Length: 71
Image (tube, rainbow, N blue to C red):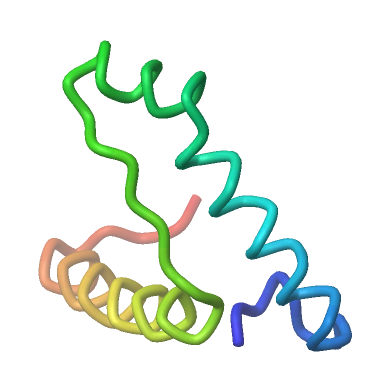
């Protein structure tokens, strides 16, 4: 689960995801994305959590290899 939603009841997360998916694939938002040359894409909370974890690891390695220190 995404760290942002930890502790949020599963039915609430599911409903928020349902609403977000419907909005992203609605005509107005879809048109907005397409006008900018983008394609609307959605996922579910479980896949988002996997993506976030993978990105955190990937960019953590890049930051470490580059010797970047937090300010």
